[in-house]
Length: 81
Image (cartoon, rainbow, N blue to C red):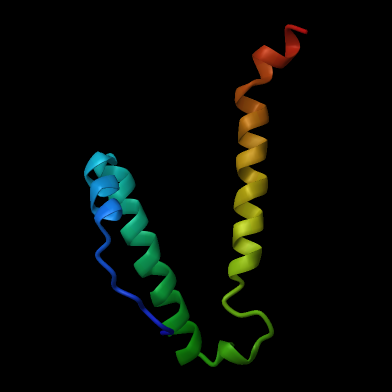
């Protein structure tokens, strides 16, 4: 499962109160989902694959998808010029 730090930091609690409930829930859900993915991958013997659980690849894919979404959402603005 890896190291699972559980800290209660004041600024984190404050940001949690200011966040929308859906955003706070999705942060916790996907953090636990990622931990579960690591556990199931180790149970299936995937830890021997190089780079498992591919966290760097997932982050870079997310960055490219956010860039594409940003370009798509600004398409009307970009066509004005």
